[in-house]
Image (tube, rainbow, N blue to C red; front, side, top):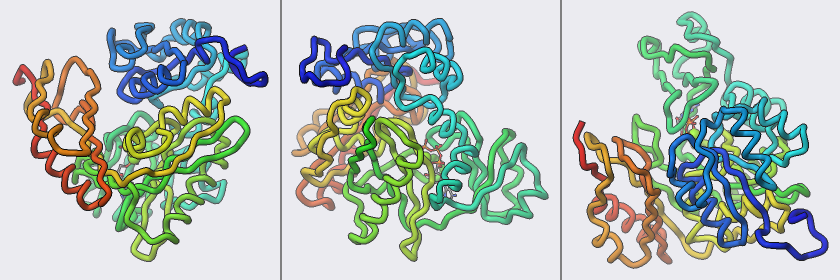
Length: 390
Ligand SMILES: Nc1ncnc2c1ncn2[C@@H]1O[C@H](COP(=O)(O)OP(=O)(O)OP(=O)(O)O)[C@@H](O)[C@H]1O
Ligand SMILES: [Mg+2]
């Protein structure tokens, strides 16, 4: 058995990892897997998807395809996922049949539905924004709940799709026509994220809180600063809250906990990502153990690594330029790489689209303001264009 030592010896590969979803998160996971002697098999409908290119092995099928899921778990030692929109029931059946799947499909079922997630967190005493179920948009019910509010789709939202901020009743006409929830708008002074790894033995390792800035109206992470510029008391409170959240879910693997910080230093959990997270990409260069290796350690039963931050970091996403699509054309790469401390990651996506996540850049600098300045500079230098205009 490659898993669960003792004895402390592993035939190569150390573990065969199945990954449902083959986007950038799976790609970076597959890279980390290679480093520590694991192999990966990717399940994704796009031939040569970003993770498939690195893993070298892919089942080309929809992530909901029951036959493909059964094949995947049958060919690996442990299965994980880089997306949440998967069939938790099917995974539950495979886990019940003895296949190792982390995080637990029961946890996935709780988290992938934003209403259920909020209910589970509230029941565990984790502070969140007040919320109410909203099976469909209902002007009276929304008014009774009170504006400003935020309407969210229960399922399938990502990168802000599926989230509608409504300052007042006048915004009701923009309500999403989907089953969802409504929650109190939180006037946050900062949005923070804390990555937490939890092992099969319940041990945890927590990364430093980071600060997330979003592009107004688009909800795609625009700038990340690590560590967050907040008082030490907020750092420890945020870490304690993030660990309590993952403990409450009995999660195994890595988790991204998104938090709101209010003007009176109150912390509320916004949402839980049961996987590696955009806000943790900086850990590849900036921490002793990055989020991807940490996840692999957790799901294979290896000891968790140190989360120590080696140097302050700023990270930006590289998004497909407006009005351009087709094969990506990367402009400004030489100029960006000429800046000391800049690391560019490109995800190997065959086609760009406006605002599609095509890569990211992490900048390390002893001084976080300098790191931030360089990241802003790189944003102005690199453009991911496309060979076609729609
Ligand atoms: N209750 C709230 N009060 C204020 N702002 C909110 C609230 N809920 C969400 N937002 C804003 O909308 C953004 C997106 O919401 P949320 O994180 O729930 O959606 P998401 O689509 O899952 O995002 P992502 O996948 O990018 O993490 C948040 O980062 C925050 O800026
Ligand atoms: Mg979010």
